[in-house]
Length: 109
Image (cartoon, rainbow, N blue to C red):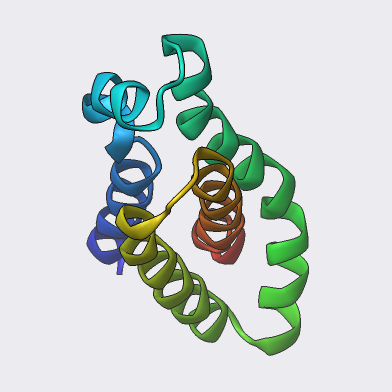
């Protein structure tokens, strides 16, 4: 069980910081500067920080495994939508939602 939780934690932070390597490409594609492109990381981190406590309440109510399953599926679907964002603002909105979804992993622990 501990190994599975370790894997879930690593996967959470891998997904949280996955756009970091392509920030210069995001800046070029969306015609924004580097500080704006880095908002793609900050948006998800903010969503995660704001959602851990609410997710822990949800996990207490519906069960930890179910909450973590919902969080992982939601974060994966949102992560798969990210490449098709037509505007930078839409990308940021999806990243906030992805961060909120990812908050269910540490919140479910």
